[in-house]
Length: 194
Figure 1 (cartoon, rainbow, N blue to C red):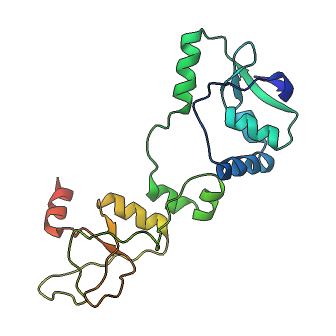
Figure 2 (spheres, rainbow, N blue to C red):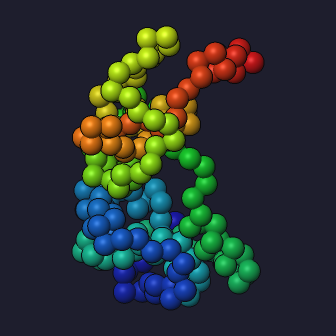
């Protein structure tokens, strides 16, 4: 790994990846707070010092006032260089919300740049898949899941494949937020046994 002056590096004009201004500002702040991160993940450049990977980190490092950045000089042919540009910007996999919820604070995750979905109580009201009632049907048993944070709720929502909906009661008052799909407990238990 080498170090180059910011002025010796050229941004890639055909970089396919963009980020919002808010995300860029968060990235800039994270580089100010934790500049060692760049050493673990250097900017990837070709022999002419044109960026192949790390355009946004480079811009953020520049905005953070760094004069030099760690780089990895890749001597790949044009085809491999283009392949790297795309593959470096592809997000593979999904987050395991259970692990994130159990091992991290939501505020830290947001500060570190993760888009933690937040329950939006002002979302547009949609027609629910089921009819809501103000009274429980006593011929059925119910389980109520209560969470104290959005990450746990989203994990359960994903695990049980639930849809969140907004609806109005028959008396015209709004529900705060409801679940638009009811789980058939017997079917779910059979699924767990397999």
